[in-house]
Length: 195
View 1 (tube, rainbow, N blue to C red):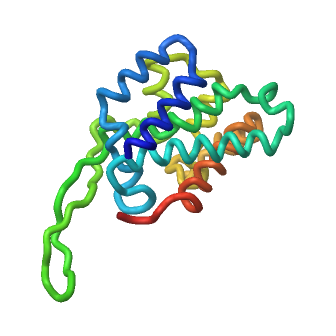
View 2: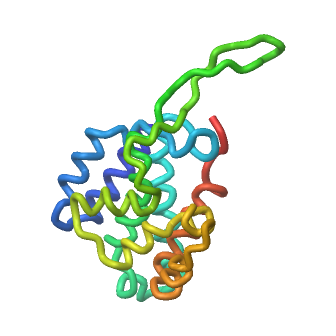
View 3: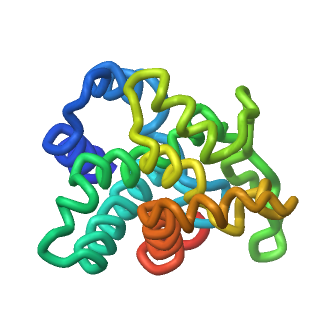
């Protein structure tokens, strides 16, 4: 867990320099960001999983942008934007999970086991909530906001209700497409399922 936190902070400090970055960094330490899971039972569902997932997504996004644009990748997408989107896309999960206990049957006997449950204190959505939190500290570019807002792709509840905005965002902002794919690859290829 400490290794991923250190890796996260090294990337953050090396890449994110805009006004408000220091205050956002301080907020992350005051929150449960470095201790929180990334999910209740799917990917990185353990202490420190959110930080680990954020680093994995950043790495996938950096690779995707470099692969897409080749030698001119930094002219197309600044490294700072990649770090902002990859590292901060899931800030909506800060103070979102609480540890609880449930009874499960193991070897024919009931035992009490810890698990993470959702506890939504600020029901503002998913990607849009991350944009809101980040914007409370520092200004996002329009492309960064779109990439973070729509990183869930077809899993976003707005899309399930048929909001065509996602298609328009993906058409106008290629970083949003690369962000969604990077999040999926981190989740389904790089990370452990379950506890």
